[in-house]
Length: 85
Image 1 (spheres, one colour):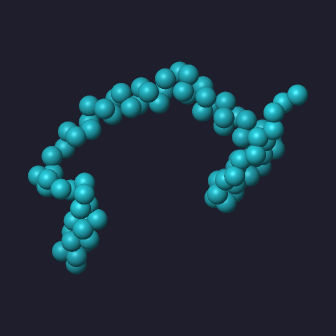
Image 2 (cartoon, helix red, strand yellow):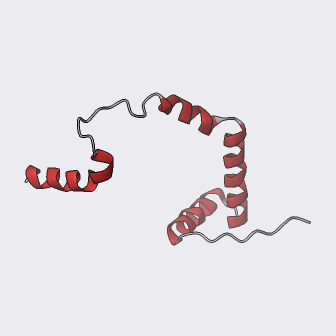
Image 3 (tube, helix red, strand yellow):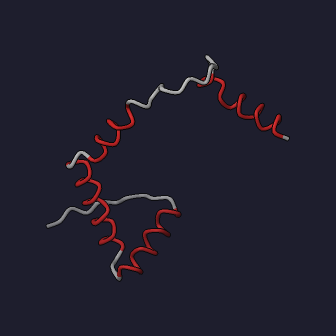
């Protein structure tokens, strides 16, 4: 007997899932099973790992010249928007 799983999702995901189910002429459960299978398959194939590996060399490769940008990014962004006016 299959295991039943209850999943709580935001309304936007439910709307998207319902639209996809209508296009595929399938039920919600079918769409969820397909999505989970694809997610698991991507993990088994190392797709996510490969993408992280490709992006790893880019992390920290850009130098803004602002030593506290990560900590004060919001402040810098607001200042930049004010100057653009």
